[in-house]
Picture 1: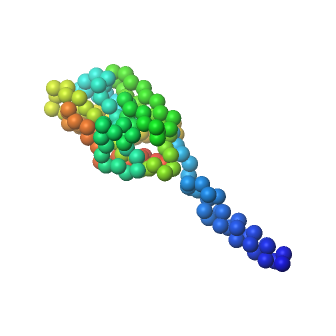
Picture 2: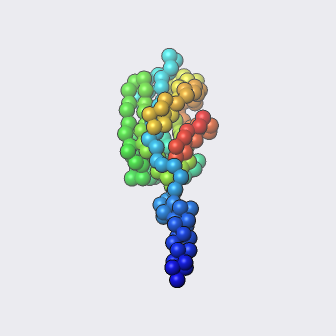
Picture 3: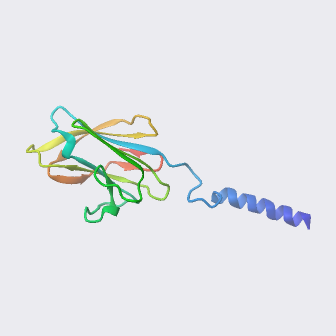
Length: 158
């Protein structure tokens, strides 16, 4: 009988190890993210610009549904450790990823500045490590998804 219990115990331990002890994910952990929108020499004042994210690979969002996105002007109930820093030269959206929400997609809202487009610098810092800076020419008077940007639980690619 003790051999049967030993076999059952080993099977139970292996099952817990494989399943991650019942948590939502056994691999990785949530990470702090900082999305930076940075002014260039030709860019207007950033106070009327906006950075938004969607969760669960949502390719679009509606400003009529504040739970469909988080932004530098909107904090839905699902976002964790949300904060915003806004100045004339930089806009920063801080949050912590949650295991069942990635991938997150990033959108930039550029007001009508009178220019043909706005050249902006963009960066994502993961866990305090400074990410690479990319430059985008963004259309004015539009909210546009950065199609090359994807934020996962512990990484950002663009």
